[in-house]
Image 1 (tube, protein in one colour):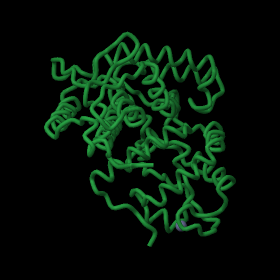
Image 2 (tube, protein in one colour):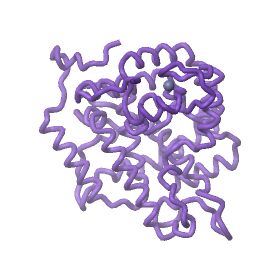
Image 3 (tube, protein in one colour):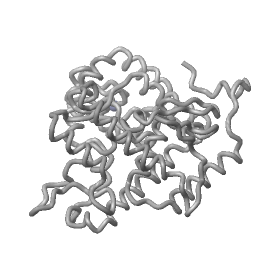
Image 4 (cartoon, protein in one colour):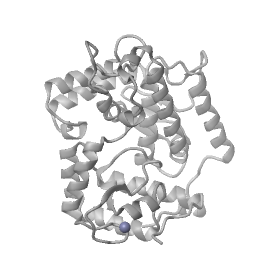
Length: 344
Ligand SMILES: [Zn+2]
């Protein structure tokens, strides 16, 4: 498998010029600074577009069509955990964080109602049910009417640089998918930190937030409890040994093969077991390409098991998506000459 930007070298595909990329970043910055964020939906939309561009986009400046339903599914994934109480709260407060300044956000309410009526533990476990498809329809309609409609309104005017709106989809404009892929860590980090601040600054959330300081992990990360389950299941599939040094040990930890700091969305195939030494040493870096080859072989071989574990613990699992993310991550690292991690 080739992870280098071969197309560019051969001149087969066109990519946005340095100037166009800078223009994109300037507009993203304006969007964050001058847009009216009356709820957290716009952050969710930016995160969804960046993720989908990585999974479905190409390394050239081509347009990319995304259906409202594809975007809605990402919203459900993002808001799922956030629709449950932040902690056991006192008195008559429900403990579910407010995602806007009026009454609770419609998407949170729809997900809550769905969870009350159905016993699924995650969107991943629910995805084949008829009820879930109805939820997607409802969320897609809200997403189309609200964030898709308003995201490109900046500072009182229109700045339609990201997409064109169609009846039931949007089309990312020429160069946009490329830029979202290229700058995804930046867009993700900005959207997540602004989202966390938004929740913190909302006065209605103050009684719920209290003294605890793990808001960002609650909003965006897989819970510790789920990670413990994942670790146990991975041991059953991969055995009690470190993926990187092969050492047999009972003290294995769950590692994101493609670092979470680079692609902050959990996918079952991306988890491997690492001994504490390798895990600490690898940290937020990408592993050398020999590990990449090993990992691709491993997840191809155990894909069905990963899908089964994912359905049980509620983490999305998809082989092709995981491979697309690896291709993107390694391609970008090669372009920017990142040093890969090797066990010393
Ligand atoms: Zn190790």
